[in-house]
Amino acid sequence: MRSLFALAFASIVAASSACAETRVFIIASQADGYGVDQCLAKGEKCGAQVARTYCQSRDFAQASAYRRVDPDEITGSVPKTGANCSHGHCDEYVAITCQR
Image 1 (cartoon, helix red, strand yellow):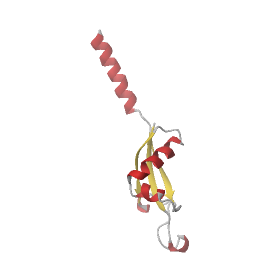
Image 2 (cartoon, rainbow, N blue to C red):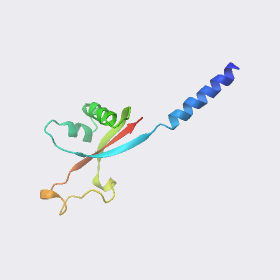
Image 3 (cartoon, rainbow, N blue to C red):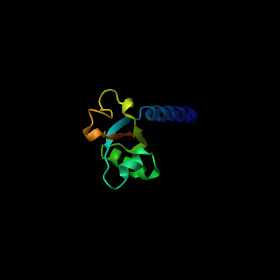
Image 4 (cartoon, rainbow, N blue to C red):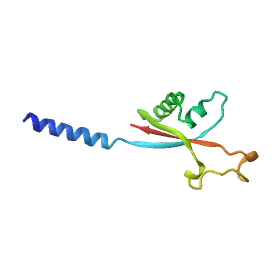
């Protein structure tokens, strides 16, 4: 009976972790003078707290990843360097992966 209960419990735990919600947020990396955007864009350790706080502000428990996103990875929604960018400069973007 105990082994049956243990097997049922393990199945429930495995199923619930498989259903964990994950969402990727793409945000503009804006130079604010504090260097926070560079920590996120370069995937440096100093960006971990910022990414976690960003996720928590959107009711997620944690940030599992953060990195710079190349504009080519975002299909058609971000201007590329050139005529569509103000003063020849386009924003950089950061992807933050959040989990519940």
